[in-house]
Length: 157
Length: 157
Image (cartoon, rainbow over the protein chains, first blue to last red):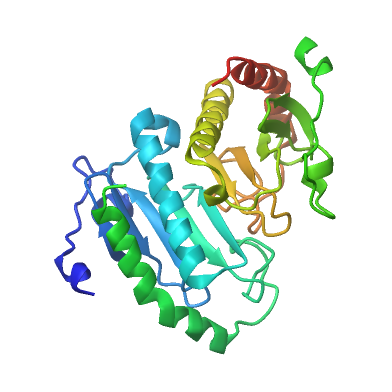
C-alpha cells in the first residue's frame, strides 16, 4: 500500500512514564490523524483485529471532550463497516478495557462462528483449534481492509 | 427507589425468535426511554456491572442511524461518569460483543484493582478470590448509582 509508506507515528505530546502506547504505535500502523491512529494487531488467531488508539494518555472516554468522543465513535463505526463489508464476519466486537494499559484504545475485532473462541470473547476460554485455511482467507483480504481504513482517515470522518 | 417502581419494560416491537433481550429486560431494570434501557446485571463478583440495551433487535452499532449512535454514546459516557464519581473505580470497561445474543447491548463495568479478574477482562482468567468486604462496600453504593442513572435517562441526555 502506497499510503502506508508515508505514515508517520506521532508519539503522545506528554507521554506517561512506562506507557507503551504513548511511545510506540502498538501494532502495524494503518492510518492516523492528529488525535487517533488505527493499528492492526499481530494476532495469529485473530488477523482482523484492529485498534483505534488515542494519541494522548487519557484513560477513559469521559476524559475526552464530547466532540472528540463523537469523532472516536464515527471512526469506530467506520472501521466496523469496512470489516463487515470486506469480511462478512459473524459479529463485530468493540471494547475499551485498558486495565493493563490505561491509555484510551478501542479493540475492533471481526469475529467468525468458526474462530478459536466464538461465541466467547477473545479473552475467554478457547472453544476449538484454529482453522488455518479460513484464517488464511481472512488474512488475504486484510490489504483491502487496511486500504479502506486508510481512506476513512483521509476522508476526515 | 421511587423511580424504579414506575419503570415498565418495553419489549421489542419486532422480537427476533429466541432472543431473550427482545422479550425480557435482561437484568434489573434501572432506567429506560424509547430506544434504550439500562439494566444492572446480577453478578456476585461484579456488582457494578451495567448494560445499556437497545430496544430493537439490531446486531451492530453500524445498523443504527448516526443520531441513534450518538445518543447511545452519550448514555454510555453518562453511565461511565456516574460510576466514576460514585465508586472511584480503577478503570471502566466498555464492550459491545453480542456473540451469544446478537441484540445490541453494551457492557459498562466498574473495575477495581482488587477485583477477581483485574487486570484481565471479566471474561478472562480469574486472578484472585473475591474480596467480600470490598464487594459489600461497592454494593452499598449501588442505590446511588441506580438513582443517578435513572435521572440521566429522565434528563433526556
